[in-house]
Length: 30
Image (cartoon, rainbow, N blue to C red; front, side, top):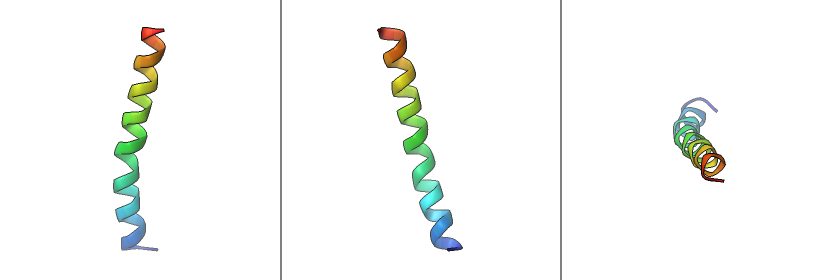
């Protein structure tokens, strides 16, 4: 893995964060 794993991790983290924020916002709106 190495560098490829790091790149995937860096790409994956913002996606997870933004989906968490979206779900939190959806819960507050509901």
